[in-house]
Length: 244
Ligand code: SAM
Image (cartoon, rainbow, N blue to C red; front, top):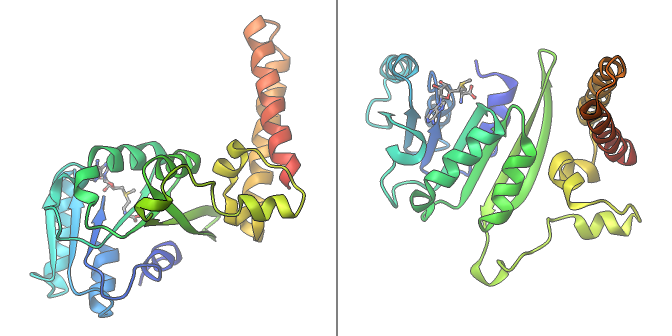
């Protein structure tokens, strides 16, 4: 049975898309999607041998050899140009996800949809999308086993719209008279801010608690760099409080 997190991702994959799941580990996501008949073909990419072998076993046991190709390699390097319509990258840090996308840009030419689930550093993913002609089309947040996950969906932006389009919902946020900075939107999510869920509040309240804890530790220090750090923390906390 698929976890709630992977099921959330599965439900976003467009019907009929040829999918590449990068960092697939046991290939649970592509297996589920092919079994459901939602995707006709998938590539499970893995950079590490252990997970790659686990993926191969999974695909063989499910009788899906030929429908799911398990490939060993770094990020999008396992793909041939044109063979894939959608890419999922889940369960890693946002910095790694952004660097995988960045290194593999020429492999993305046929790709219409990106489904990305960073464990941390969501802002880095949003920023990369924005800077590389991808439109953030949806955001989902969910909680499972005490952990909170965000799933970001991006679609290719038409060339004529590319010239520095504001993040979606920026306008809507303005309409509610909240003046949020770009930085806040990138960190906290333009859609999630607009329609906040319980999990989103919990995430940012937890984040505030963490910042408080760091501040308390810094209070014991008298160095100048601790002063700078404290000032930074206050900015960060105010940025979050402004929205909550
Ligand atoms: N995507 C699955 C999920 O969300 O449940 C597995 C997540 S697992 C925590 C991360 C996987 O990404 C590991 O199996 C790791 O080997 C793989 N990985 C890390 N860096 C990678 C890269 N540059 N290219 C391909 N796979 C990578």
